[in-house]
Amino acid sequence: MCGRYSISTPAEALARLFGPLGPLPNLAPRYNLAPTQDAPVVRLTGAGARQLAMLRWGLVPSWSKGPGDGPLLINARSDTVRTKPSFRDAFHQRRCLVPADGFYEWKAEGREKQPWRVRRADGIPFAFAGLWDSWAGPQGERIESFAIVTTDAAASIAHIHHRMPVMLPHDATAAWLEGESAEAARLMEPLPDGELKAYPVSARVNTVANDDAALHEPISEEQARPVQRGLFG
Image (cartoon, rainbow, N blue to C red; front, side, top):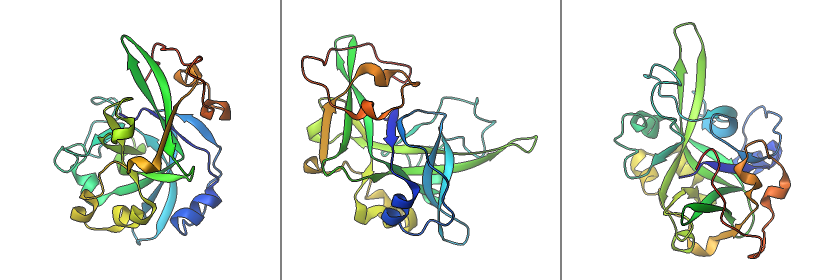
């Protein structure tokens, strides 16, 4: 699964990467973004224009009773996303791009786990394949939320975890956002091994309150000791 990620790229740079995005919000760099927090996503407006919006991580289906109705839906599996009721309509009608510059995963070592960071080898920001929905409550409250699509891990990082988020190639973002469902379905694959870089990082990432650039720094093999995984393990 993907339970933590980072996006420290300014909104203006995201607009250069993903195209015109309309009025841009002020984005604070996030080095340890966690479920239930707001994060930037790129989606289409009703008029078909691209928009950078802040949505809650953890999809709340429009037909549900609300955010406390069932488990927290932070990830959507690629093998069931087209048929599972929680995600089916969003996959066909409300796909989005989730800008990121890396994500964290925990490698099991017996009963303990060591955090690793995974990013593109070239260091360029990218987009996860995402889905979004809008829930309206009985008192007029509204929650716009998203989930990240996951797939089998690429061979080079399968020793860390058997699943990984779908990291879209740069030339595939338009097809995911604007293409037909069949075209989008073909994109739910791991990024090729040569395009990935993974390394162990400090156990400070286990604590949500830690949200600083030092979390991106690799640690040595001597420093990498298995630790108990944090809240989202």
